[in-house]
Length: 68
View 1: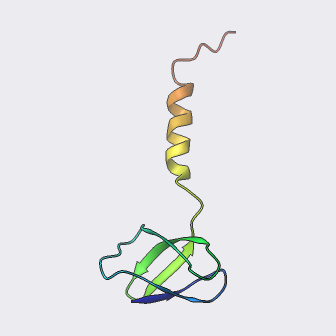
View 2: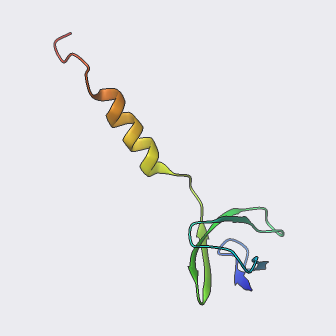
């Protein structure tokens, strides 16, 4: 299975067991990409798991005394 790199346009080989959300790397431009569709295979830029960062920030804010 192959998908086109959104950065350089090269074809990226994907494993048969690749799943939506998996990270892959373009062998041409070395961009880290994320699988967003399996059929047809489609990739987008991977920016990290920001949702998890927001959850951690909210957890840290809980319990803080607002009257400093």
